[in-house]
Amino acid sequence: MRAVNRENLEKGSRVKVVQKQDQRSGKLTEGIVQKILTKSHTHPHGIKVMLEDGVVGRVKEILEQ
Image (tube, rainbow, N blue to C red; front, side, top):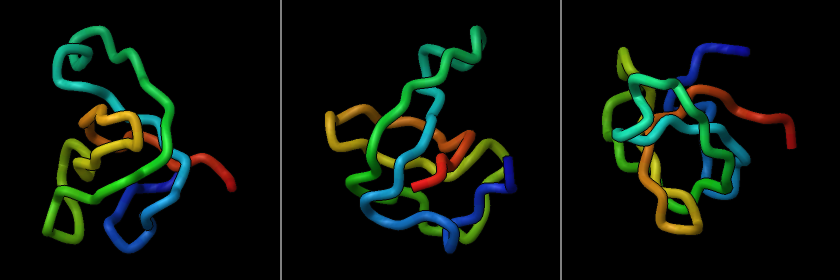
């Protein structure tokens, strides 16, 4: 798993994110990026994105296409 920087992400990337309510448990949700919400290049807790199904979370892993 590589460090998740904004330049590694693009619309349509398949990722695993942690949602706000799942931060304690660490449960990951898989989906396709619809929108990148974080403006900075990096974030200590992960880049925030919205998935195609409307889920918002911080990217923990980028899956191979």
